[in-house]
Image (cartoon, rainbow, N blue to C red; front, side, top):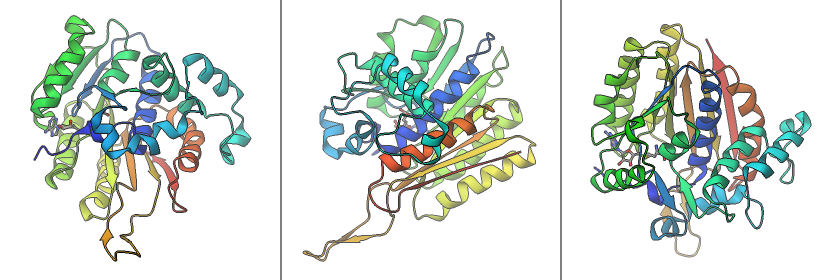
Length: 321
Ligand code: SAM
């Protein structure tokens, strides 16, 4: 328990998928004036240094967000808006490495650019800072983090924002406690559930959490990230979430991004075998904004192409309800 530290993985392909979906979803929800509450059940440390010891050790960002940045790596809101405006339907159906970026990816890179005014992506915002960056004064953010070190870092990072009562950091079990904020007084909420799945029981706890949350607040928007790995619980999770949404009569959306094969690799020289790092991940949403599917239909082919690590790179996008 608690060997997972998100700092090793910040900015990897799974973060690209998760944070692109998060930004597109939140941007739509913020178009309405009524206050929104965002609940982040597994918040992490909030901010990461991609040139720091942790990120440097795994180098996962190099195969993730850093690949999306142009050489020289500057992606400001301005350049992203320009590339987004140029995006054509043709580019979306047949992405090329030099094609203009899809609007959802452009928005993602623009936000990363806002944290890195000098260019590149030395600073990588985790979900708490991505959300806080987009929220308006009357919106609320509830952050759950249990790891003692990450909770302390998150506390310190959030304190610098001087956001007062807008943001609450809770050193509590996100699965067990986050539903206490549902429904929020304004009856508008986005719940991000992004566990580390370092223990097998996390998969069942996600299902219990979503079932309880839907019971309390059926009209909330729920976004669940999960790893696609060869393990029955991971395979079953989206199927069970789909059943849950369908039984509740709620619309859902399921997006996946694969960057490489999950097959065990054998080193020809040494004969040693090892599992590749995370090959794929998915985002499952209940009550997604209607704008999300067309945005992802443009962005996912580009993610698969630009983040591919071998010929197995692909994506899927499915919705119902
Ligand atoms: N959501 C973050 C982001 O996108 O930047 C990344 C979160 S990371 C995948 C999962 C985090 O959940 C880790 O920091 C871990 O310490 C924390 N965690 C694990 N079990 C938890 C629990 N039961 N409640 C709250 N946090 C937990």
